[in-house]
Length: 431
Image 1 (cartoon, rainbow, N blue to C red):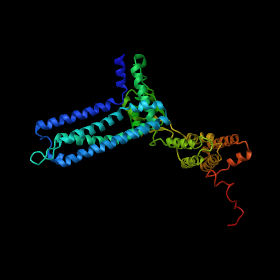
Image 2: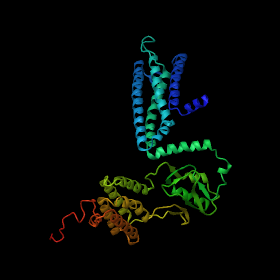
Image 3: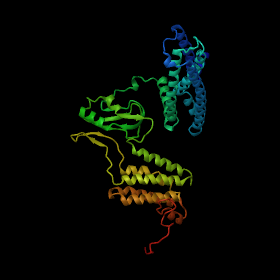
């Protein structure tokens, strides 16, 4: 039982990897110094290491810089963990602290610091008749460790920024859960049924962030078949779930791993090739503005401004259907794609529900919908009419006084500020 507890403590330790790196730094310095003494310090030329005074200055700078850097990094990490605990869950701390990338980065910083501290006394500016002694290999390794620390710092900042996002934290916990499931319940023959020759599965879990349309069309053309994407852009796909289907033809000549690689999976949606994600973000911002009654409706209005602008630009444009043909006009690939109705519902379905009780938001939504209806072709107006009906019904349910409901249904580009019931009526005045 004692050995099991020790093994568990080592496995879940935060200190083991940095401590091993620190020991490696000590050993590297001792070994490099021994090699310098054994070879007569002829391995590295003096122009690389510099003079004794320059070498001492460099090592002293490395030491002071690393002390400051380690203090700053640990402080920032502590604050970030506290923020993550408050915003997401206190149970997320374990996953953050056991992140191996962070541990190896901290270990590299500690190894560089202790290496420079041990190398500094080995530089002698008065030996050998006044020329001084600089251990060449020891200094070269110090330079390499410092360069590695700088590169690691840049990568670590990127890694920390990615990890502390919502998607990064979810993926961090999800990856750990996936590893534990594989360890506790190894996949047997029953978990790997005979593959369907018409299904190309996803090699890993993730969100569809990019689809190489030309590559998939070329692959389908070469195999004389038609492919159909199962998930749409931005959909999450489980590992092993259908990614593409052979919709026509036998597809026996398809290079299935290559075809699967033509669909990029990430941990979070992104802007390239996914304009619906921009709508989703604006809607999220708008919903937060009215999450509590009259929380920050002006923020919601500003988000609706941009949703209105985006749909107005889209109102008279052709929206691709997701069908892709080869040069001969043969259908080779079908990808799920939003149509006009999908974009309008994505922009307004949630907002007319959460914003119906805010006069400012309701007036701005009505102004946007009426303006879109005035510029959209007749075939695209039914969805806008439906949105106007739902907005009207929601406002009437949200206000007991009919006069308040009527006021909340006046179109107003500012929400409250430029509606027809608020500005001077000068229609009878001659210009």
